Amino acid sequence: MPTPIRPKKKKAKIFLFLLLLIIAGGAAFQYYRSKNPEKFIEEERVVVLERFQAERPLMGTLFSITVYAETAEKAESAMTEAFTRAATINQVASDYLPDSELTRFNGTAAGEWFAASDDFLTMVAYGLELADLTNGAYDPTLGTLTHLWRRTKEAGQLPSTPTLDEARAMAGWEKVEADLKENRIRKTVDGLRLDLGGLAKGYAVDAMLEVLRARGLPHALVVAGGDVRCGLAPPNKEGWTVGLKDYNNELNEVMTLEDCAVSTSGDVQQFVEIDGRRYSHIVDPSTGLGVTDSLMATVVAKNGLMSDPLATAACIDPRFFTELSAATDIHSRILSKDQQQISPKFPSLVPLNTQKPESE
Image (tube, rainbow, N blue to C red; front, side):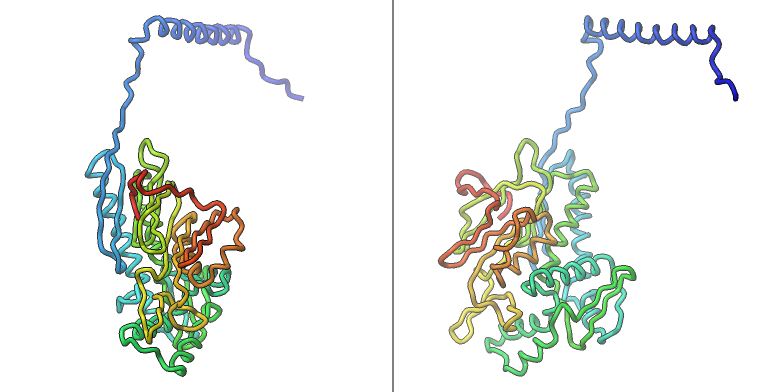
């Protein structure tokens, strides 16, 4: 059996001597430093972050960014990149653009596989999953119905029963298949059209915040109409002050939030009256017409991809949120003319006169 190799005694003594010398030298250095602190004060770099803001019209609303950065150049460059990212998503998800990815998919025949981008596949796959979880309270396959409802609002006249029934027959989240491995999507019935209007802005504000974070600017706030995405809190603050409107569309309360998303949906501003009855811009899957129960829903969730469509779902079926566990980190406040449904862990609200909101 081989004998373990051991250093010679002389080498061992030298090693021990060097070790003791290092220890003794370190102790002497610390003693000298304690007696002469002015010689060893390291110059600390103090970073001062300034507030910058920019806005741009996108997706039929106004997008805005508030960010804290060291220089205007850094802030402006990052915000420009974030807006460009949102414009890219709009080119994917818009049903108004004739050459968007969504428009091209809607033009495919039943059974035809469509090669999808990562953005499109993510939005569609998540929308289909959410439709299943909410039992259709949010459904991205209502495109034929939402287009019919747009024409209905413009004409001020309800569609005929056969026209409505035909459009309703073309909807249904179980009629779309998403192949995540091959990045492709297909529909199983002709005439089905996707509509990502209740999800795309939430996805966009998430993506914009990720751009800002990647550029070293985590203290940021992105707002797109009723969708708000909060990054890390502003310097020396607990969070971003987000305003909340009441059922009468008046801003009178605020909440302080960090690293989450807030989305508000309802018919307080967007509605139409036909034959003396009020209809929301949100289509009820069960009728194919605008929602008639006047509601305003606010959802706070981990990100905009969750909060945006869930705010729509809350207007369709408020009961869905009474069954959600607080452990989901999804919290809601749903207002009607006469009552309020609020989840136990919804963020604390304080009167507006105590704080000025960063967003509303």
